[in-house]
Amino acid sequence: MRDNQIKQVALLSANDVNVRKEYRLNGAAHWYQYDQNTRDLNNKRQVEVFIEFDNKGGDLGQPLPKGIVRVYKEDREGRPLFIGEDRIDHTPKNETVRLKLGKAFDITGNWKRIDYASLGRRSLEQEIAIELKNAKKIPAIVKVIEPIPGDWKMIKENFPHQKTEANTAVWNIKVPAESSKELKYRVRSTW
Image (cartoon, rainbow, N blue to C red; front, side, top):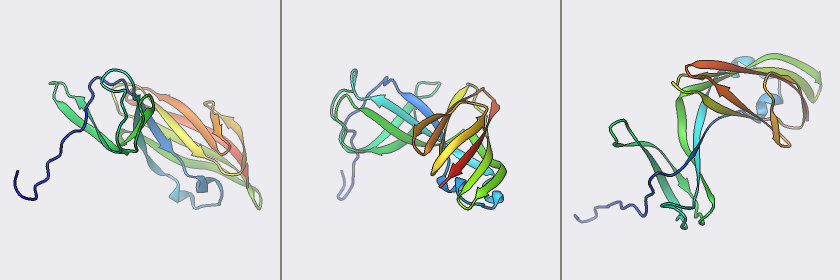
C-alpha cells in the first residue's frame, strides 16, 4: 500500500440469504388537511424498494456491527451485480434487518385527488385515485401507505385497507406484470 492509501476490507459476507422484498409507495399527511392546489398533487410518486432478512442461520446468526451493508445479486452469467446499499445500526443475532435499497425504476405510482368536499372549518371528504404501473415481467405487490391525520373514516374503497396505526391506512395491491392497477378510495377526516 502507498502512503495515505485507504483499503476497504469486508468485515463479513453472507451468500444465499433468504430475503423478503417490499415495494412501498408513501403518501404525505398534509395532502389530507388543506384545500391545496391539486396541480401540486397530480404527479408520479417513486416507489421505494426495501428488503429484510432475519439475522440467523447459515452465514448469519452473529452480531452485525453498525455500518454500510451492500447488496449484490448474480446476473445471468453468475457475476455479482450491485443492487443497493443502506446503513444499519448495531444489530444482535436473531433480529430482523431491514434495508432501503433505493427507488424502483420499473414500478411507479400516480397520486391524484379526484373529488374534494369541505365539511366545515376542520373537516373534509376526499376521493383519491392512485394508479400503480408495473413495467416488470413479473407481478409485484406494492404496499401503499397513506398517513391520514386526525379522526378519519374510510367511506368506500375498491381494495380493503388495514389501519396499522391511528393515522395510517395501508393497502397491499398486486399489480400484474407489464400492467397497471388503480386504487380508489374516499375518506372523511376531521382534525
